[in-house]
Length: 67
Image (cartoon, rainbow, N blue to C red):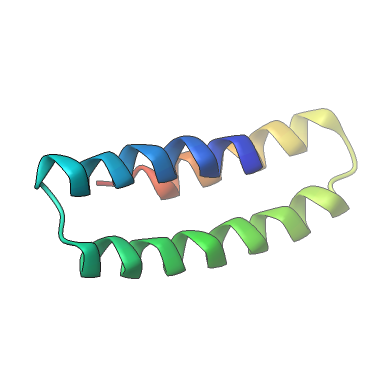
């Protein structure tokens, strides 16, 4: 889950540098992404098997890369 979040963070941060996103937009996205990450980490910790953990990681990846 952390790796997925870091990958999305880098992708969106690069949008600031290329001018596709403002710093304000990035900060809003960053706060939302952190909340999604924290919720996913709680679910991930309670997951009973690897299949469920993979599903959670996939869901967070889709949510973070929605745009």
